[in-house]
Length: 328
Image (cartoon, rainbow, N blue to C red; front, side):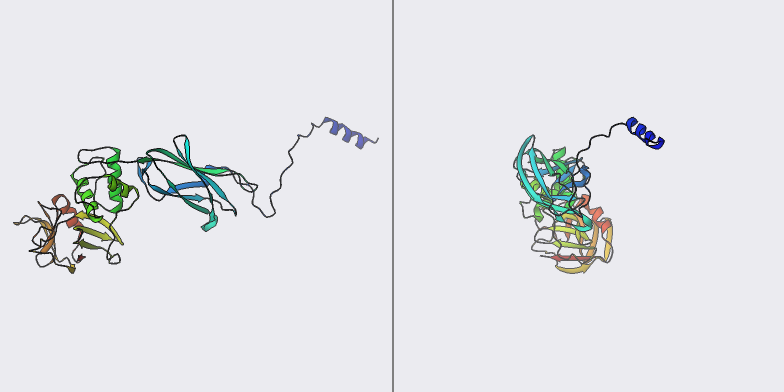
């Protein structure tokens, strides 16, 4: 053995043994590498429900539409979605993922929160040869609330959030005060319910579904006012949506309100000798103004009465030249 061969033999004897390795499974030709199991890869959201202090609330018996957003789409993807109440699984569905924009994936499904209580929605993508496990989850609480004057707390905040979502003018203080009562009355009038201020089960059910808003008759009119005589509500609109919705009382049968399209031409601050508070005139002596009595039916001399606490904010919102549509 020559000197070089002897030196090589000594180096081989000194080297540590190689570690044993599992045989690698090659991915299909052209497949991307396996992805991380990071849970941010899948996010869930609801199309309805209300969020208060970080918690999501839905109505008991409400049908839920759940949307899933997957960061990276691959053909043939599926997720297993479970609805759990407490520790019990009450529904399981296998849902295919469809391709979305920018390489993402989307899916949607319907579930139902049949009883009150805490629920968890969990969606899991099982590991495949091309993409590892990932999952998403969200928690919610199914409720069946009611509230009224003197109430306070979470139920009232949910009521106020739901009303504000549609443009009904309610505070967000967790107290069922007079402003909240007026907003409930406006909501009930818009939705053909009995004209009172009770936040009953049907009121909450609609708000938790995010339904019950006012559909504008003139959505393309820009900043404008709509008065709906049939429902006795006044709507301040902008950008194609109802920005504020108010309980209103118009002219009684002997002194009816005029119908048509008009522009505000005069504004009088303060209270005049007739008890009209912060008046915005749109034709002759017809105006929107605050008044001490605003019943649930037409009762004025032709003007559009609004509750005095709302008068100043309405007055400040309206500008000279703004359009009002008054219709049946």
